[in-house]
Length: 300
Ligand code: CP
Ligand code: NVA
Image (tube, rainbow, N blue to C red; front, top):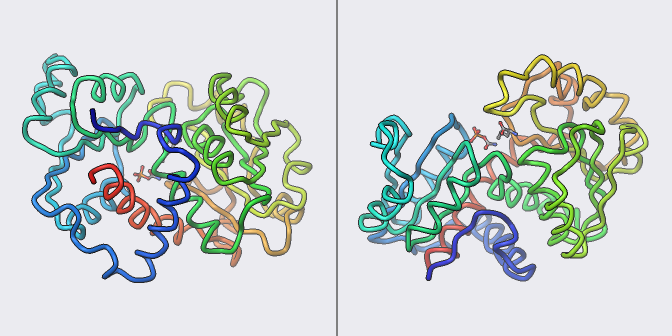
């Protein structure tokens, strides 16, 4: 049975570190990758829009010697009611792995249960593990290591916050989530983070959270699929913004991260987004390097 990558719990701590090390080596020396995906086809399936995941995965597969097959929901008979379990079994007869961005995490679980090939999570409503790997690579290349303080300001129940919680436990850094009381991370994710030895604090006090932070991180207030409750979420999260006052509480050496796309003026101000402390575009670039390491690891 092949291994899938639906969340960071699929990796042991050592494997998580190994992927980051490999990604950093490959970033510094492109020739080190070789062509581990020669003669391999990877389906890249999207139920939701994407810029970074879509482009970085396609480029990663090509640069590793493989062939990427881009599929959207509307291209497939799924749009006419074919079952995901049947789709998974058919795809597995043609391709070597599936990267999927899905509305519901259960779709990934069903794909992984029925396709006897690796399934990689390119974002679900619950987790965004490929994003978190790029985030921790950005910490690593900035010399921010174990024991650092990573502060996430925004929707604590989001896919990005969930993956940062598990990633922080693997990475060995402290994580503080500043979020409203009605947007707490899901209890099962907090249980996993605790089991992995994670050092987690949840607070409603953004300024206190930001004190002496090494990393300030935010994500959109309204995730894809939440359009119907957009106004309610924006109202709920309006105090949970990365702005210059919040930044003034962090360490002078702190870096600013955002998974993108950004809604400037909502979760982050233009000034903070453009500040010299921002590593947001390095972080976006790192999606390419960590995904190469993920493809190599799960397709070996
Ligand atoms: N951060 C991220 O996953 O971006 P896309 O939605 O553009 O893929
Ligand atoms: N939480 C965001 C992340 C986008 C990369 C969303 O799901 O839309």
